[in-house]
Image (cartoon, rainbow, N blue to C red):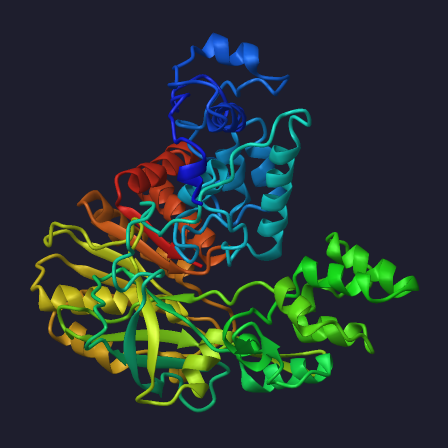
Length: 545
């Protein structure tokens, strides 16, 4: 029997009632329980005073409901503890938002604010969707959810939360084709390495054919990939479990589940809890400490699933129990580096393959090495489009565009430039690109030269961090180009940045403020407001990760 059949869905308290989200949830659950027993013939709207009289002792509503608080914690470079301190005393959705990674990356199918609201309202039940936030975010969300469930202790059980909804937040509506919930099927065409011999990086230009996929996109969107775990890592985990790959897990095999359905990267707290149940003595205490977020041996940050199993040799957890402890394998998002107008039916990515040695073993980025080495040309695979959140070319084609994209951050700007060329946009285009060495890491050099020759790329400034005695970064080039940059901004240019959220993006923003001080004659405070006003006006947009 469905929830709708058992419990009449009756709006008793409107969202405008002067209660926190927790208080409304308790009250609506209380009224739903009464209505489910048919104790009243029809719902009766209650006043706030009547509702408050029925409610047990609960925290008073926050003076500020968060609607106009400006979300000062919405900064991906800010530590979690600082974000939570800024959100202290706010309603549950705002505190949950502060727990997110603040990247608005869309990997969860939402942005930070809407994911937090969906969790707080009960429209989303999964606490583990914030991939960039990792275990830190998951632990905080669990803590907030547990606090909400436990307060007040005497409250009757609320109605069950509704099932998770699609990314467009419309319950029961079928998800459009080409979305995370209803991915299309694309064809992997191939890969070309962008670095030349001698580079310390491994970066790939990846191509897909969208024919028959139902997928379409615009410049600025991201591409969602459903990766497969490295088969050597899967084999090693099977060995550590002393379990065969064909061990049955529901209607699948253990090998299939480990390959395609669960994350083998960071070992989740639940895995250490399971280990604590099947070991004893000092090892039990150590597993419990790891499960609670402690770091008894100073290695918690580097424990993936295989390393966690190897840390407790000799244990033989039930494979089905182990699978239940692991997090689902989430899709990965990449900025699209092609233009649908210039190359209809095709899509490209610019991907750094992640490989590094740690404790005598090579660790791999699951999606980046899947695309960079393991998938064969001609393979059909599931994928989807994540629509951009505040990251798009200006509607006015005559507007000038300034783009800052070091490394793989060039991806959306390659898309922008090809789109502007195909659309014959009269506005000027300025690109800041940087990497380690010019001779080996100048991505798309020939293309960029061609775009300069035809007049689409008005100006190109490059920064190479390992070519000279001193390191030079894109923020240094921004400061050096201050007079011209200020003139472009005064003329209405739109400013874009793509790349690392925690360091580069903050350094670029600081460089922008410095330009406003030095060449705009603004005070430090006025320069900060200038940059903030650009963001509010949609003229300073970021795609960071």
